[in-house]
Length: 151
Image (cartoon, rainbow, N blue to C red):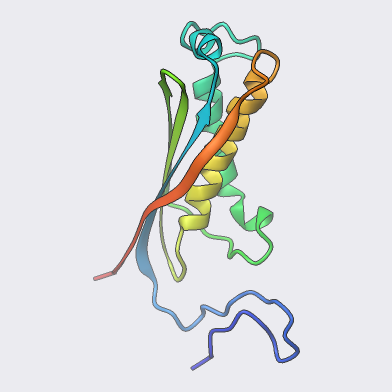
């Protein structure tokens, strides 16, 4: 069996060999938050941002980001994702982004969930930067990850 390693014989970084691992059902959930001024929250609530519907655009961007994780993170395995769900929720002091990813594969989907959250929050930032100079992206974290054998 192939030894799973992050470096070659010269200590250089390389992608981990997961070829001998079994396919499993894998799910990950990530969450993050962008703190906004009350005026910005109200503009989003009233759909008055010049660039459009902030929450919908951020959700779509988060899905696109999760799908491209293998291209963005150098040693991350490209995965065929079966589900990506990004939900952006307006709160009194900002926007919470949640991303759930699901696949059947040999490696986890937590990087995809985290990337989905980050891209969604960056999209909120981009769409609101003209009116809010104090935005802060914070509390981005993995909420859960699971794997289970396929029967």
